[in-house]
Length: 385
Image (cartoon, rainbow, N blue to C red; front, top):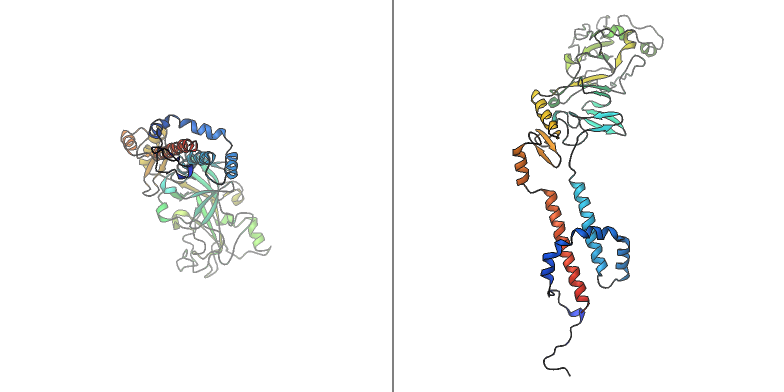
């Protein structure tokens, strides 16, 4: 028999989860005071041992299991948030022994928009990709704004690489990129074995109007290279091979500057191959074609207004970049962007007015931790009943 005013003791299993023990609200108000120590608590415990203790008690969730869950939120979430929002402090990078800096870049959003999606680092080799193909970047000259490129399928003075279907990439730019990138005027393209129907000759194969010397480099010297002896296998070369002296015969070699045709597409020009050489000296190279520098020399140009923008951006600690959607210039200022520079009051005001994603994520994490700690305290107090 029980006293009339007494009530049976409730078992732990019959406790309603809706009940709130006294002091929970007080704890919730003060729990923020203990939150900074949670990261230290998690780091000082072996999470593997916590998992083991959880496995030893498969029935009800233990405080160790709850601590393990909270540690996962406290440790894993900040790392994931940091990986998702890495602030850009510099756009300069390296590929092999070549520095990649403005106006080029290897990271999205860095560099000038006119030269975006152009350079890629592949196994330590800096490559330039165009519609005509891929080229190995041998040098980037930031002082004179020049790129030195190499096409492995290009002929030179030592070996000819020709095929009836055309060999080598040539050089073709996207129309929107042409204002920013072009081949140097002192670069000569030597087109080899072009057919009589080639657009180069416009239906007049016995005329070599488009063929000319460029900066002292032309087919007369190039046909003296040892590669031609190997190509003809020691036989006698056709008479007038350079300019197709025979009636109706196209020239064996046609030297053209980039400005004459604006696109060197070997297959479309109906040629069997090509070579390219450039001159950086004002005097003619000694030794004829054997002394030429073979490759493609390209140069870049940016709008005049961009110089002032990028200079102001760098002077205030920013990195010059661009908006990936509008392609407008941007100054990258760590975890925020500016349309002028990193000291711009207007951009700073807009930045402070907008909620910062990283701060919002941190607030959400701490709210989850506070709720979890309160639940742990309540669970421990109920377990003593």
